[in-house]
Each structure stands twice: as structure tokens, then as C-alpha cells.
Length: 241
Image 1 (tube, rainbow, N blue to C red):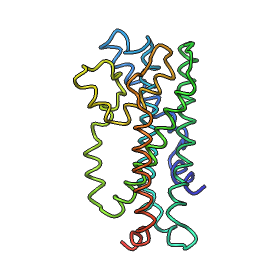
Image 2 (image 1 turned 90 degrees about the vertical axis):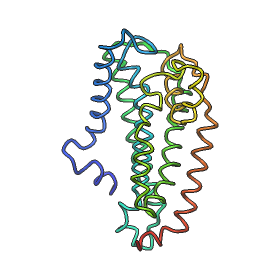
Image 3 (image 1 turned 135 degrees about the vertical axis):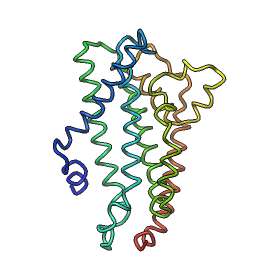
């Protein structure tokens, strides 16, 4: 309840902005690229295609960023002995997973209704993609939560490292469009697997042959475990910084 009130309750519109922001971004991308291209890489509908890449990417980004700031944001609350860092992490995790899942289905459903699309949906692929985005967001976010709380400079460094992530996560294209020489390097980015798998769920003609779910979940588990180990060991020391 505290996270809901402080995250979405302070701005006019509250939860409405969680829906309007991706809608505006998808509309802008669709307008710009429709002027440059005759059709998207998959299908014929620009909003549907760009939503299929933007929404899982945004889900990862929101979850990872919110969890990364959990300790710093909740320092006053963590001063109480009954409250632990796991409470702060899980509260943010639950809130933003629920919010982003709702936003994803509202936006995709809205595009299908407005543009009168009749897709054949692959639900296991859709939920696998969302599961990968959530797991990766929690894993990376938890590790960054420790690093940012312990080392102030890390937030700046991470921001520089991830700045080109939007382009390198196959949001605007599909990996199959890249030359074979460069494709393996793109697929080192686990988010490229997430967006491709989500598109496999939305486009019945797309196979997403380069997706490796195990690779993504391994990264999520390793980073998450490292983050939890360090946080549980040092979060009381972090509160004194």
C-alpha cells in the first residue's frame, strides 16, 4: 500500500500514466517508421509490431529500476527491526509486476480491438516471454540494488552501459533481419530473447528460432542469487551509509 501510494499516488492521473506512456511511445514510433517503411518486419500493423517489442522491454526496465532503488528509497522504513530488505524488494516486485502485466494486456488488447486484428495467439510463448522479463528484471535489479546502495558511482556507470539497450534489444526489428555475422552478438543480450519470444506469441508466422529461454533464466537466477546474498549480508551496513 505504501509503494502504491508513493509511486502512483503523487502525480495527477496516477495509474493512468502507466498506460498513457507506452501508448504514446508506441504511437510515436509507429508514426515515424510508417513514414520511412512500407511495412514493419512482421505483419502489416505498425502499432502491433512495435508494441510487441516495447512492452516486454518496458516491463524489464521498470521492474529492474524499481527494485534497484528499493533500499535507498525505503531506508527510513528499514530502520524498524521487523522490516527487512526482502520486504522492500518484494513489495516493489509485486506492485510493478501486477501493474506492467495489466498495462501489457490493456495495450495489446486495445490495439487488437481498435485496428480490428485477429491474431492467433501463442499463450505459452507470451507468458514465457513475460516470465523471462520479470525474472531478469528481478535478478538484475536485485544485484544493482546492492551495487547502487554500496557504491554511489555504480548508478552512473550502469546508466552509461545500458543507454543503447533499447536499440540492442530488438525492439525496433527482429534478429533475423541482421546479417548472420552480427546476429550472435545481438543474442548475447538476454532482452533480445525476451522481445523475440513475445513476438512469437503474438505472430503465428514467427518462429523465433534464436530464442534460448534457459540462457535468460540462468542469467536471472545467477544475478538474483548474487544480489540477495550480498544484500542479506550487508544491508544493515548499507543503512548506516
